[in-house]
Image (tube, rainbow, N blue to C red; front, side, top):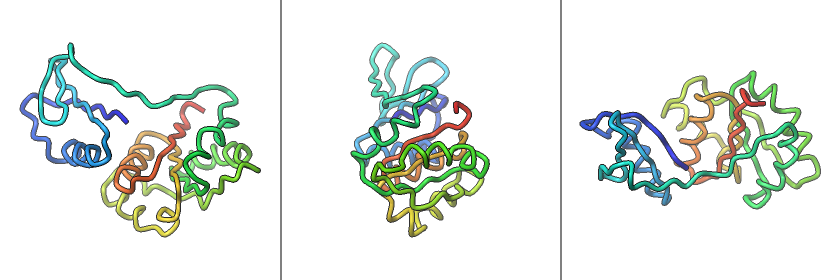
Length: 168
């Protein structure tokens, strides 16, 4: 997981960036915070762009990509909680449901992410019994929904699979 955020050299890494760095380091992940001089802050040390590491996640795209959901997700368990925006979930649900039919994956429910990317919404989702039962999260929608689910993934240790519906 790579998190990009533009910051100034004198930025106080409290707030979102600091909390995210703290959570990511707990799970052995990295965050790179870029400033306006093309340097980055990583784990407490500024360095030049000459020295950097990028560990990109798998990224799949295609008109029939939903058919590969079982192939990518079954290794992570069987139960899924789908979280996103109302319109995005309505658009993605038929394709996801069709793709997982007979695969052994079970969608526990499709639930709304809360409308804003906030720690309060992440905490509410963390407390949801079906989120606690899920082996993985399907994050469905736009930036706020995906960001909320990524943060939820970090705080719960549950794998997340983003479905950016703008690309569907």
